[in-house]
Amino acid sequence: MVLRLDDRRIRYTLFVLLALAINLIDGLVTRSIASSDRRSLVAAAASVDVILVVSLLYYWLLVRPGIRAPATLSFVALLGALHATYFWPIRVPIRAALAGLCELGLLAFVAVRMLSGTRRRSIKDTSSDPVDAIRDALEAAFLPPLAARMLAAEISVLYYALFTWRAKPHIPKRAQAFSIHRQSGQVELLAGLAMACVLEIVPVHLVLHRWSPVAAWIATALGLYSAIWLIGLTRSISLRPILVGQDYLDLRYGLLFRLRIEAHRIARVHPRETIGSPPAVVLPKGSQPNIWIELARDQKARRLFGIETRVRQIGLAADHPSALERALAQIVQPGSPL
Image (cartoon, rainbow, N blue to C red):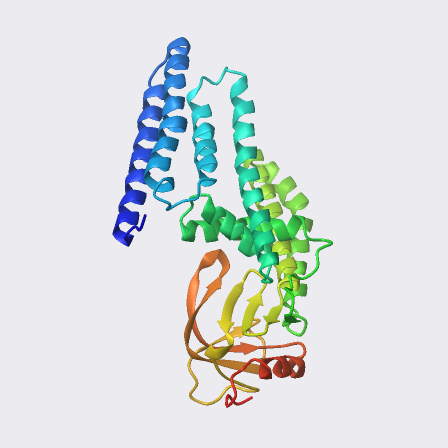
């Protein structure tokens, strides 16, 4: 079935509105009942609505016409089951167990989609970058692209902070990797800030605890989370170098910047910025570039949380500028000055 763009938008909008209405009405009805016996009966009916009815609507409006993949139906059902657990009285002991199982199921769905996406990229001989796999998995789970990119950034930081201590840089086959972080010292700076966050947790907690235990624990949680974020950013910078492939240039600076450029869109590469050039992005920020890449036209680059910015010229503080220039000379179209 061939669907027009307007038809897709109508179907998406209709499903979202119906799903929100069902969840909102069922939630209000179950919370308005004081009797636990009656609430259990109403909660059972409401659970059928948010799990079965919403899933059927999703299938009819989006899966059956081919807009969404059938596998995403399980994500919608799990999300409904997670919401349904909050309809039941608090004293029902199975409620917490069901909520935990639903959350594990949602995480498992994202993990399976992430692994399958990484496997497909490996077969196609493209980058198996976990950030791309996480984002694709979230987009496949019925999340809007912007929300998927923002949530992917959050999950990616946790991934790099907690699970990459033995990992190697993500470099696809037939691609060359070039680092741009050693001369700037930003990795050391971020690592130092993370260490400072860890060291100040105990004294700050003890000081605040004298006035407010709640504030003390909030400050402790924020300190730990800040340290995890800084560690994740530090690890991502080391594990996501610039890539020069056979017909593309993938400008990556950890989770802070990403711009993939096809070789024919590179206007020229030169060792220093020319007078009168358009505003440029410098990687790492605040460093002294030794290679400038000018594009034929503006391109959209992604920063942290999926924020997009238009770029025409990029200055790189490459750790090995001569090697990077030679690699770029092999892919830039003849006649483009180097």
